[in-house]
Length: 240
Image 1 (tube, rainbow, N blue to C red):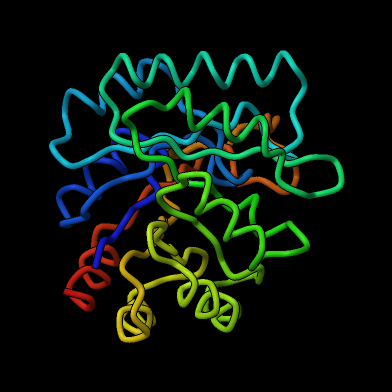
Image 2 (image 1 turned 180 degrees about the vertical axis):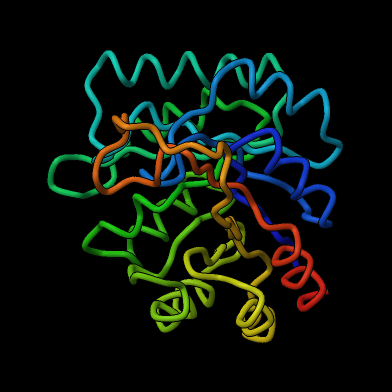
């Protein structure tokens, strides 16, 4: 089973590789669902990791309906990723009615070239998941990252299993809420890949600033999110 770790920093990426992850999805800002990481981070990760690296292409947080300018940025980011030799692109575009924007998603796949393409959890917002999955598979999407349209993959297991039965060229990759205590369940259910971040909070500085630059819903100013290598090792050991 492939264990893909969603890594939000150089440290998390190195922890994931050291723990035995098969590949990473590189992004920034996990607390807002992830956005495209910086050029410098992608470049450094590609220099230091030996496992495959997939990169999230999402220009901002919020919904998955993008302006023309934002879409052009996504295409530029994919071109940069290709020039740096990344192995995969993780992206997707919806329309305001929460259906897949087929034209733009097709353009992203074409721009990705030889990189594998994962359609991300924007899928969990659409209204007709089974038919949409069939169309994504026909379009050439290699993997689908989804929680089964639930708060966690365990809660969405019924839909995940239905999608898995319909998959032949596109891998269903459950993600959301997967940890060391439940990862093996997905292997036993027949899935070929899982996705997790396994983050923990650590104090990054001893002093909490008087004025926070974060929103009230974010993490504290003196904390950062990094992948927990102990949890990752337990997950990977449990499925392999």
